[in-house]
Image (cartoon, rainbow, N blue to C red; front, side):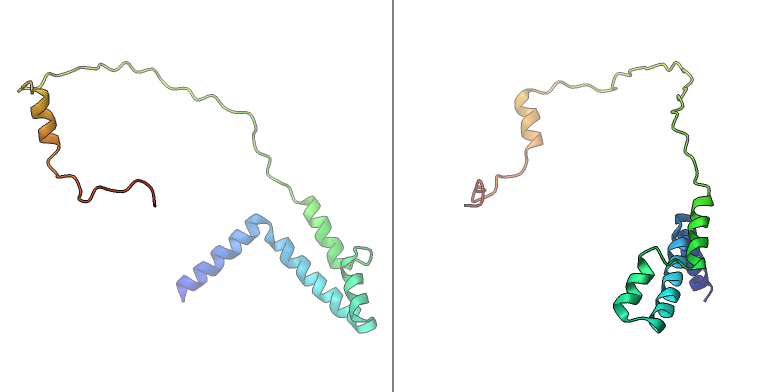
Length: 126
């Protein structure tokens, strides 16, 4: 139960942060306008009056005013220069304790221990 409540609160916060609350309010306003227009007009005319923008209800006017007055965050477009402190590091190579020079044949024979596949693979999908 507590997890479900947390998920609902998280979704609500996400919708509010992205501005989806305006879309929800506008949907509620359109639904109310459509219901009111449907009482006095035919279906096609009610739809036209609802969405034409000329017959806006008080809720629609308040929603537009709220959207315009909402302050949008301004992002800083100037790129800041990253400064790294110069640290001098010493690079030291250590020789291995045991060193043995292998001939070419010994080196390659130890690297290849598997037999080639039989039959040999085909080139392409012919």
